Amino acid sequence: MTETGLTVEREEKVPLDGDIQTILSVKFPIKDADGVIVGMCGISTDITERIEVERRIQESQALLQAVIDNTTAMVYTKDPDGRFTLVNKALTESSGIERDEWLNSTVYDLFPAEIAQPMATNDQEVIDLGKFVEKEESSPHQGKIHHFFSVKFPLYDAEGEISGICGMSTDITHIKEAEQEIKESQAALQEEQRLKSIALSAASISFWSTDILTDTPFWDESMWGIFGYLEGTEPSTEVWESAIHPDDRDRVTRAYTDAINRKKEFSIEYRVIRPVDDGIRYVRDVA
Image 1: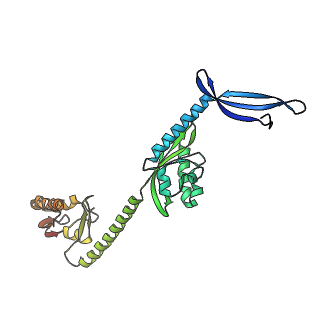
Image 2 (image 1 turned 90 degrees about the vertical axis):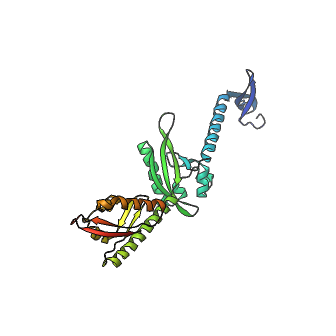
Image 3 (image 1 turned 90 degrees about the horizontal axis):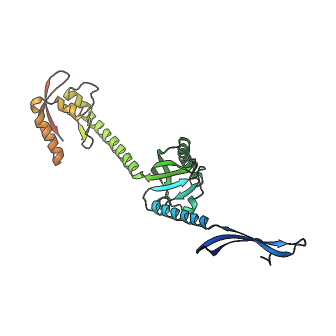
């Protein structure tokens, strides 16, 4: 310092009261009227406590990172301006975007505006309401649009002010794809049933099916004519059973339940009492 004439600042370890303390020393030259260095002044500040606090903070951050890196959900935090301040391993691996690219970036930096805008809107809703929200969001991951169920909630500082948000997102793409496949299958089945109904409309034959998981039946138009149901009657197992002749009802329902439980053919003849005219029809069901 006396050679360069510059101020020097450094941390030093010194023994004090039987312990090693960390001292921040600032040393600078003292010059006379001619600018000649004639001495040195030093200011030392005990920063041992600050160093210990920083160490504990680093340990807590490392512990938090280890915890969130070992969960399958994608976890992240953002500051009030929407910049990512923390991301976990699941997010970086799923997205293919490195941690350093996430940190200090906003969703607008990482995704097209049409993808980023709904996310930013959801984040702002958390800050405006000051409470958690649940949303479905979409974003490109590994070159494919994925769908996520996201839970977001505010983070608070020591003064109770919102300092950011935390989000946890679960990939539900497989559920969305399965739902779409079911919708397409149902549409195809309904079209098939419609065509069969047209083909059988001239005969006293009807077509029906039942989703045994939800106990949801589908009847073609011929069912109303054969069973004599009133127009607008909602198809259901209960409605069907109520039309069966009381003397046949137990036998038919037992056979129907047995066919489902044993996964075998349902084939039976029985009588029905038509609600519209109390007429009796003989019916044969094969399923």
